[in-house]
Length: 105
Image 1 (tube, one colour):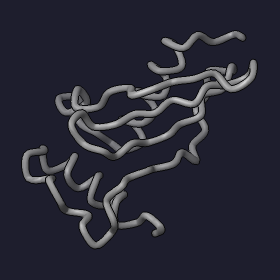
Image 2 (image 1 turned 90 degrees about the horizontal axis):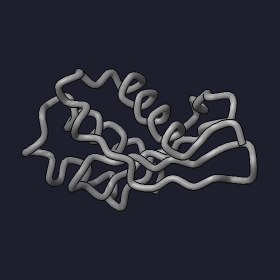
Image 3 (image 1 turned 30 degrees about the horizontal axis):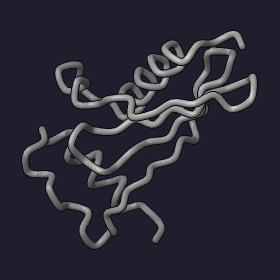
Image 4 (image 1 turned 180 degrees about the vertical axis):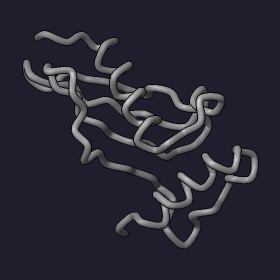
């Protein structure tokens, strides 16, 4: 494999915060929750906001590219999308609210 787990995690984290347009001073809220190799060609990396049950699942290939069609997973039903977001900076709360609201039940 031409990519290591730490490389895949760093690539996924950078890709996600850039894609979500998270300001640099708020990027520390995000953390890698898990990563695992899938065969010899790619990793699956799970990233979340610390203290929240939500996560983004991103595929990182051995070409050092991230699949732009990542998945968002949350146990929060769309009807409760704004639960527990008061303590986050507004931009992060809006990202979680948007993704939670768009989830298919």
